Amino acid sequence: MSMAYYATRDLCERYRCSSRTLFRRMNRARNPFPAPCIQHVGSSNLWDEGDVAAWEDRERASAKLSTERPGTTIQQPATNSM
Image 1 (cartoon, rainbow, N blue to C red):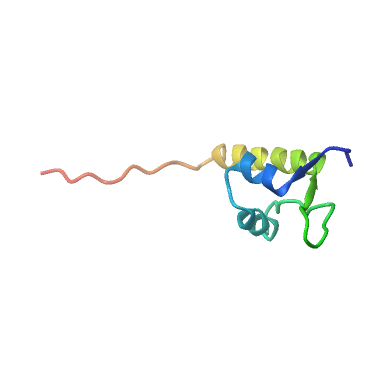
Image 2 (image 1 turned 45 degrees about the vertical axis):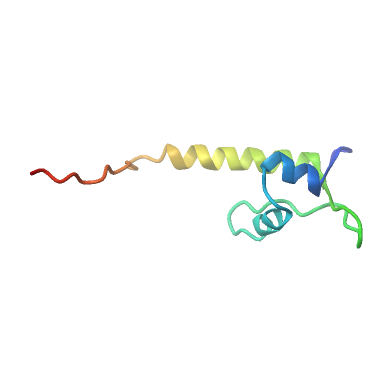
């Protein structure tokens, strides 16, 4: 665990999303967003910078794999010939 942290606001700005979206991503079945490592009632949650970086790496790898799957083609819409 590193000694640098992201606050909720930092992550919302980084990913251009709401705090609710961050918490939805934490509940995903595939590559859930890491939970905050420091939580206090009435103050900001803090996420470990290393945990967030590892999640981003997994997201990039997953996106790359999904675009490189063999046999996956993008189908063009049918055109009407008259």
